[in-house]
Length: 386
Image (cartoon, rainbow, N blue to C red; front, side, top):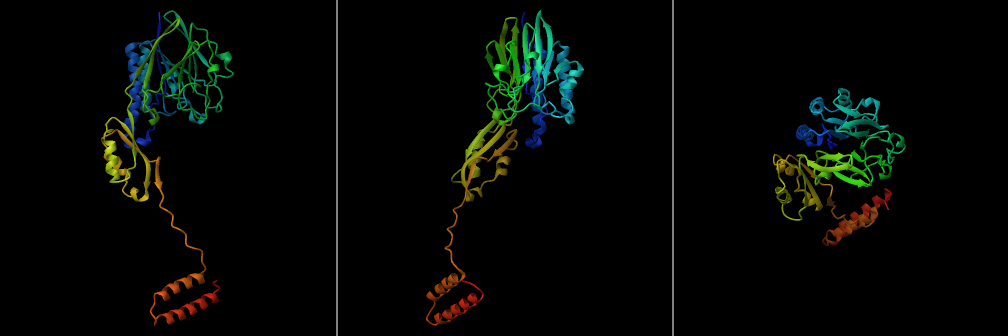
């Protein structure tokens, strides 16, 4: 007999989404909708396990409405006979005592899920599923670790599972997998104990999996897009089936994540820049899309006088879900610096000025200008000019 499991992570429920302005509430609803698709799939297919690899929430203080929606989902899934196990991630693990407990602790206390709450020490849950002893070891994100430190280093004694099929559930970057890694702890492949048959990891938002010897490592990926770096990535979760002899099958199930799209426009060298930019954007307009317009190239200060960012935003308003205009890659050409005047003294400048006047004067005016020059030169010398 085989065991069925749903693997999900990085749902990032209740993001601030402040950069979406008046659309921020709808953007939050997108994240919750995609999570509910996971829950609905679990209720429909009734897997044995639902494993959550951290960052279920985008912060340690999600709204009460989101908390309530998640509680309702977990209660229904639990009552359907699905066992839920979860760890905390970077976003929903408190970094200090002032931030309190993880929001996941409430669900652990409710009895609807098994929350592995100690990020410094692996915790274990042994389950009997269809005659197969399944052991799940959970280790959430530990904010006290140093950048570059291996979270599994020194935990060998705590990472000795005794099941017939052993799962390690965690939330960390693992070397050899694709994704952005900052100044943070990272797991070396060599430190993953070979006693595990499966590692379910959260943190990287792009779905990926790799077999390391006899260990299958899976990042389910995020269920909704968070940045434009995820524009080309499919979003979803993993349906997995395994048995005594290992993994039987795995399938990536897509969610209805909101599409992101980027349009790159070289700043026009001639004509009306606004009409040309709007023409380039026209083909990407879609009410469901989060659009990024990247203005690139080089522009003179004179040409920029005809460029108006608010006009682009107004053009896209109501025709896309939300529009962002980026000008980071637009180089503004500085006007040529004027040539410096030759270095002169006050007396030399006086002399130059009067000589120009004298050269253009008539015979009657020249003596007057010559006298004016002599008087002015004397006054300047008295004042200390040179």
